[in-house]
Every structure is written in C-alpha cells, then in structure tokens.
Length: 297
Image 1: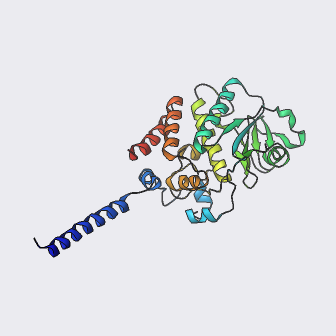
Image 2 (image 1 turned 180 degrees about the horizontal axis):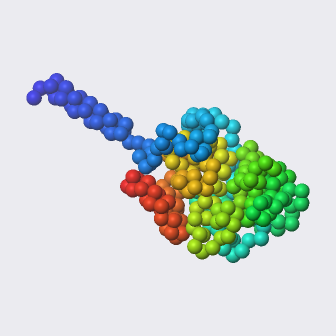
Image 3 (image 1 turned 180 degrees about the vertical axis):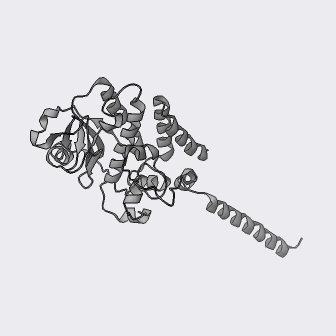
C-alpha cells in the first residue's frame, strides 16, 4: 500500500470514528427527557366541574418559568418550616411529622416543625361556626396577620397546618388552604382530608392528600404555575376527588423547573422518595417512583 493511500484510509477511519462518537453523544438524553416517558398526558377535553374546565390558564413553558419572579432558596435562607396551629392528637402529630420528612425529600431542603400553637391565638372576629357545627378560621388572617410576623429569618417557606376547617371569605363554604407566594407563606387544613376524623383506617388517604397539597403550594411559592403538561402534583384541583386523581409525582417539566432553582441530585431524590413510599405503604406512588428509577438503569 502506498503512503498516500494509507493516509487517505487513516483519515476516512478517523472520520468515521469522529462521526460515530458525536452521533452517540447526540443520543444521550437528560434525566428530564428520560423520565418524560413516564409522564401521563392530560385528556384533551377536561371533565365538567374540574379545575381545567373552569379555568383558562396559560401553559408555563420552562423559558416562562425562568423569566418569572419567584423566591429561591439562598444561603442563610433555605429552610422550610411547618407551623402546627391547633389541638392535635397523636395520629395528627404523626401525620405532620411524616409530612416534614416528605417535604425534606421532595424539595431536598432542610425542613423543620415549629412548636404547636393553640387555637386561642385567633380572635373571635376571624372564627365562625359552619353549617355542620364545626368551627372555621379565616385563612387570610392566618397568612396576613399572623404567620407573616412569625416567619423565621432562615426560612424560605413557612407553612401553617391547622386541624380546624378554613374559609377564605364569608360567601365561601371552605378552602383546603391558601398561600402568599411572594412572601413564601401558606396555610393548609387537614380537617377535610380525613372528613374531620383521622383514624388508622383513613390515615394513608389523609396523609397522601396533605403531601400533595403542601408540596403543590410550596411548588407555587417557588414559581411553578399550575401544570398543563401531564398528570402532576402541580395540576389545579377543585375537589378532593380531583386531588386524589392527581399524582404526588411532579411531571418531568415541573421537576426540571424545580431543579433549576434547587440544584439537587435527581437520582438521590428518587431513591429517597422510593424509601419513603415503601415505609408508608403508599403503593401507587411507590410504583411510579420505581418506574422512573427503572428508566435510569
């Protein structure tokens, strides 16, 4: 073989290797593209009475999220605090403790529970007796006149949790919770999650609802709008049945948004979620987490 022919053959060989290498590089997809295969798309036509049926919302693309004004964890201000308010029994205390564990995993941020405060802190002017005979508390007062004065200096989020029912204004019957996204504060009631009476038999159902609502509201505080991409914890909800239908899992797009603000290890987070769901026997959410992990193998 002549030297010239040898050089030509060598160049062709290295060119093929070069093209093959970069074509392989292009095939490598991100974590979010990988788990997107497990996203369950929403129906094109929302059911009457559902959140999407009653609300015409804009799809928040990732670029829209990046441009939006939002709070972010930062050094010295990166802890989630839960503030229990009310008279909690042992089962309710367990539910709050597990919610703390879950939020720490879900957001990969330090999460703490503040000492419980009694219902007597609320004046009579912000209380009312609902038609079922139960006392309700005005949600806006808890946010605007109470929690805002008690937010710890190192808190990125302060979430109040009460065992009393909440109402947003006189003409409304009740509300699951309310939040002030700019101030990084929210409040949620566990009352309706267990139909006013938490027991061993309905504990996991109530816990799952609290996990979804609390992570949903804190997700809003971090700038994530209602999800229109897939079945997701960030979907809007009108009723408990709609909350139950939505996954605790954030879809690939909402996970990408969250991870852009909180730089955590996605696989580590999934493994910790898997362990949590296993211990609490939350089998549906466990199965979905395992499906995501399987795609990463």
